[in-house]
Length: 360
Image 1 (cartoon, rainbow, N blue to C red):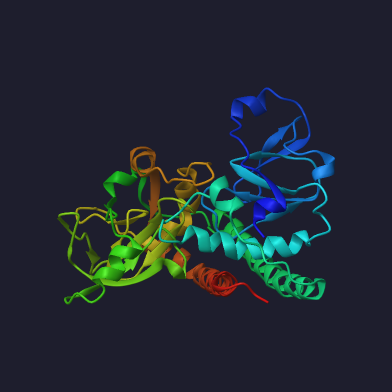
Image 2: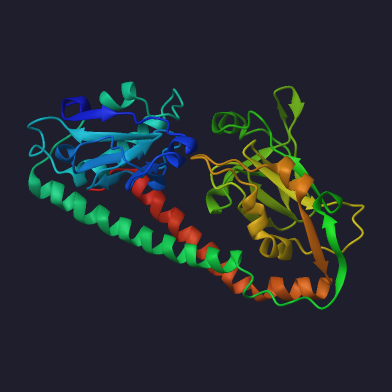
């Protein structure tokens, strides 16, 4: 049975900030990963269509959401039962089934990154008996609760890292109000460094460089590749110095400290590093901690956020304490950063397990 035989599919619509600003109401407008963009007095569904499912139409990462009350949808699709179909299958079962189906569709040979109606409505749906559906719901909901717990703890750490609570007032400064462009330089990514390109060139000989992606998490590593030619240009590499990997899109503005090594990046990330001619002593781990909020401020608020590298370099000014005080702060946060990385690994492992196959 096709999905279109059971559900109506509404692709949602684009709602501007101005429209929301000029409207009154208490109906939430969902966007992206079930984030609330604002409120107004319109709904994309009626009471009889509830409960229903929503999911982002762009940048789908495996999340579908059950909605029980009226809402509107910005760049968010809606699935609601056709007449007489509600008793055919459990909505929560469909939620977990479609997570796998959608991810599989998006990683097909067509390299689909947008879940349009033509893709979704032709998806085949298997409907087992109630006992199996309940088993699927029970198992998958446990995984989901574990993921939620991990994410809540990560948010707590993020809140601490974005605050100034653990950073004492500095006593001595190398310089105050120094433009960041006088301190840092950057390496932009390699256009065309896709998974397909990497796979075709994995066996090439030569010194290998670890490939980093737009994610600052442990799944950042996409394997290793030698310094070959890509789109007629020599592969850009970063080696023998410390750096900060900055996510350009997705989790835009998040950073990860890089120890000295041999790296290259795709075009969804930047690597920042201290200029040779910089007059000051800089601990990049301290910089990432002390100015974490600043990095994030240069990220757009769209569903698929982008980090504004140009704006960051043009408008960011920092106070530079002594290297001893920088080292002290970096050391003070070391355990917290380590805990965060442990949680990220656990999150990725769990997501990989969930997304690898449909869990029965």
